[in-house]
Amino acid sequence: MTNAENGRTAGEPNVETRLTVGGAQSSAGVTFGTVMPSGDLHPDLHGWWRIVETSQWANDRLDDLGPALISITGHGDRLRMLCLLAYVNVKPTKAGALVHMGGCGEYDPLSGTGSVRLGKDGRLHGSAHQDQRR
Image 1: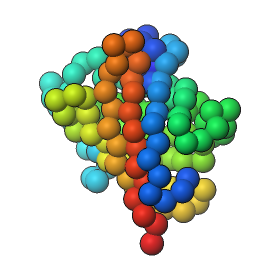
Image 2: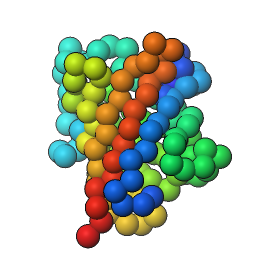
Image 3: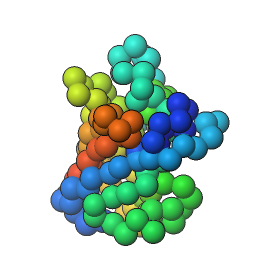
Image 4: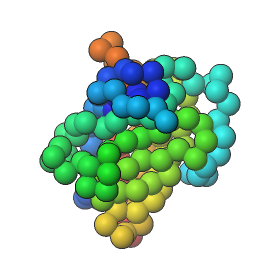
């Protein structure tokens, strides 16, 4: 994923996916849309991150609903990629952040968790795990 704000280069049930974001874009946690104090999260994680690669899905389909991205701003954060739209809550960890998400994928409700960290290459790296559908 790429952080558009600072210019840094970021399916199936029970599937873990690795995400990488990269490429600069113009800038413009499961209770959704809560405000996160800006001092709690490392400032380099803040912004809109473009998702450019996953380990699970075809990368050429990531932008089916528009540019694949995750926002980490502390207010109404969202995740969009493939046919997935979700609100996310972000909580700081020592190594980066924990992400809780809830939304829909191909018209089915979904929820899950993930984690992100800023790599030495300036890209946001992470993994996501979709909860079992009932």
